[in-house]
Image (tube, rainbow, N blue to C red; front, side, top):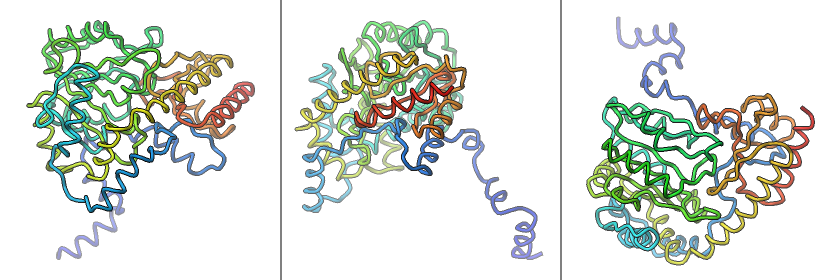
Length: 404
């Protein structure tokens, strides 16, 4: 039988989608789609929705940063950069860590500029994980960590955190989760979705466990500049942790540069070199236009950033107070721009509550269970939207609760 006739018969026996599906890797098949996207898709189908679901600043990128990007394009700065990124940008990043955290990083070897923090996280996992390695992932957490570990051939080990302890993971919890296969620990503070912040003492106790068990830490600190009532502690500033940690950070949250996709990683030379090896084959370099914007942001962006933080703080107090007054017990977030109220008193699951609230009152939130099993019974509500929208959203949530 000719190849063409055999192919035609197969097409009759198996629908095109079924034939194509068999080529998908089993690891990818086992990974569920993002729970956040489900609700974004529903929002797009409806009019008049107030969205508290998007983890994105509602502020436009400050003009001086946009102007730097535009000017670089007008000058014809559109070429590739070094795989590591523009040296001037890396020098500025290095200076920030020296000034803010008293940690020294060589801009030529210890700093890698990436296409957003998501790429930096993916590179970190792939650079370190061998098949079967276990990675401890405290939850609730950002939705990409566990899938990224799995895609790198590792096994994510979730560790739940609880409101009673302000959603902070403890050294003892980490110690109990360690096995002979454990290689790394993920930290993500200030936390998405809870807004939790780790105290320095907490991190020092975790550092002892990390040293005792010869682990490496991937610390996602993209919300590090968005803290309230207390400063953020960079994990690598803890004694002995500079060589045992990769710090992930970027410009999306602090400087409202989400669409420009600019992140970075800092760490010891061998770890950054391994990440760069993957980066140079997969991505080559971060967009040069975004890098030019990042240079301007680090040189002159503190004033605008602080204005945004002050506004987030006002919104934070408005939302947390409003949720508590209507009977939804809400932990006070100390960083990022999310509230994580408990809806356990309603008797609804997180998904039931979110779906009904969207359909009945046109308010979009994210069910807490998409951030891990221990997030069940909670909702993520972003307050990165205008005060007018937040006040109206609170009114609609209260009306929904009254209808139950």
